[in-house]
Each structure stands twice: as C-alpha cells, then as structure tokens.
View: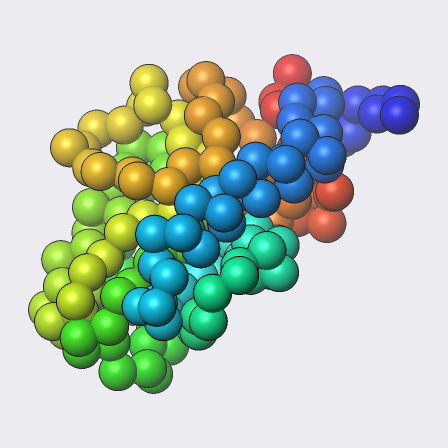
Length: 179
Ligand code: IMP
Ligand code: MG
C-alpha cells in the first residue's frame, strides 16, 4: 500500500509504522495481558485522548474478563513535554484492591507516568502496570518499569493511530514521523 507524506499544521510527516504492523504488536500485548491477568478481572485505565485507538484494538483482543475506564490528564503541548502532570480526571471507578493496567499512547520522558503512578497507588490498588502503544527508550528520564510496551521507537515525533500534533492527525490509520 502506498502512503504519501502528510502535512499537519506546519510540518510534513512520512510513513513510519503501517497499520498491519501496529495491529500485530497490539495483538501480542493483548495476548500477554490475557495470559498474565487470567482470573484477575483487571481494570484498564485508558489515558485520553491519545490512547483511544490502542485501547479499542487491545480490548477486542483480550480473552479474559476485563473492565475499562477512561481518565484524562494533560502534560504535553506542542512538540515538547512540559513535565507537568495535572490531577487525574474521570477516575470514577473504585480501584482499591483491583489489578490496574494503565493504557497510554506513548511514554516519552516518562514524566506523565512517573506523576500518575503515585497518585493511583494512593487508592490502594492490588497492582499497577503500564501498557503503552509506543515507548521512546532514549528519552526516558525516570526509572520507570513499563512492562507492556507494544513497540519501541527512536527520538522522533510521531502522529496517527490516536496520536496528535497540536490536535490533528489522530484519525490516521498508520503512524507517521516528522520529516
Ligand atoms: P511524557 O510525559 O514525556 O512521557 O509524555 C507522554 C505524553 O506526551 C504522551 O501521552 C503523549 O500525549 C505526548 N507525546 C510524547 N511524544 C509524542 C509524540 O511523538 N507524538 C505525539 N504525542 C507525544
Ligand atoms: Mg497521552
């Protein structure tokens, strides 16, 4: 399939991870989670907005009973991480004694996850792990255990499959990187 470059705002992006590769790697993570959480009825906390496609495709591949809820926090504007983690919005579920799996679109510096984890742990969950569509290991600035990464990438800014550049690009089926 041909994937011409796309322009979003002032930047050009070229194809990086085609949809079939994304879905293949999401299936692998779902299989691992289905195995590891069998009988534990985990609750996925999907971090909006970026994780919505990942969360949907992952859920469809889960073969053990599980729940999902959506939370919101914002730490990123433009193409640079600000490192500020605001409070969790939308955590309506009681996660006390539950096995929690955070679903994130991308772990970059790790500021967001490093800020979120202690806030979640205050609610006394039985366990908390992180599943992320993408991780940029070179950019990680925290000692963060990300147990379920679907794909590792270099230090590139990417869009598509839920990820945006200043609000746009989330609708792309494939992931593109800035040229
Ligand atoms: P961190 O706090 O630096 O790990 O950044 C995490 C958040 O920054 C993610 O949840 C994304 O929303 C955003 N982000 C980081 N890298 C990218 C990227 O390459 N494209 C789009 N969003 C990104
Ligand atoms: Mg995000």
